[in-house]
Image 1: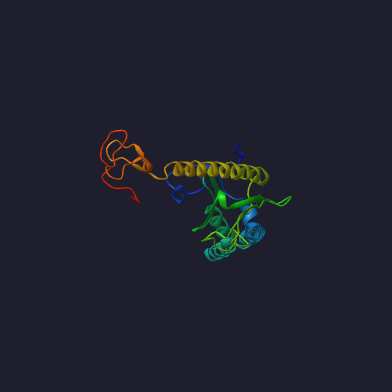
Image 2: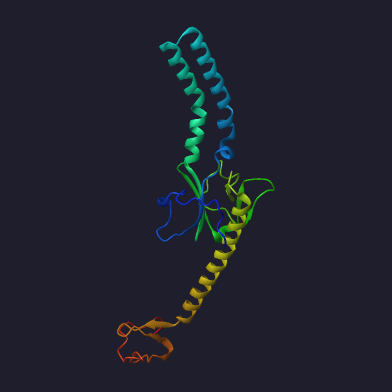
Length: 230
C-alpha cells in the first residue's frame, strides 16, 4: 500500500495511541477547508480598518488613543481567525494498524477495521467517510460525524488518495484479523480436552489418562490435579 504523499508524521498525538499501536498514516485537515468563513471573512475587514486608521492617523497625526482603539478593533476582528487556527491545530486524523482515529480538540473518535463497512467520498469532495457496520460505543455527535454510525474526516488534504489508502488498509487488516482469529480458533480447538503437565509442560490428552493413576505420558509425572470430568 503506497502511503499518501501528504502524510504528516507527528500530527496525531502519540498519547492517544495504544502502546503497541503503529501509525500508518496521519495528517491534519486543511485550515480553509475546516473554517473557510471564519478565516476569509474577517481578513478584508481587518485590512480595510488598518488602512483607514493609518490614513486617518497620517492626516491628523498619530496619538495613543487612535492607535489603542485601532488595535482593539483589529483584535476583535481577529478573534474568529484565532479560534479557527486554534481548532485546526488541535484537529488531526490517523490510520493505525488497528484503528481509524479522528481528533477534534479534546474529543476523540475511533473504530476498529472490523467495525468499518466501507470508505466513501463524494465526487469533488474533500470529506472522507468511514461507514460503520454497527453503532460503536462512545462515538459523539458533532462536526466529525452526522450520526453515530460513521466517522468523518472533513477537509482532508489529498482526499481521493487518502480514501483509496484507507480502503486498502481496511481490507488488509480485516483479512489479517480474520486469519488471526482462525489461527486462535484452531489452537483452542486443538487444546480441547487437553491439560498441561506441571512438570514437563507438555500437553496431555485427557482421554489417554488412567482414572486410577493419571500420569504424564512424556515424563511419567503424576497429574496432581484431576481433569474436569474425572
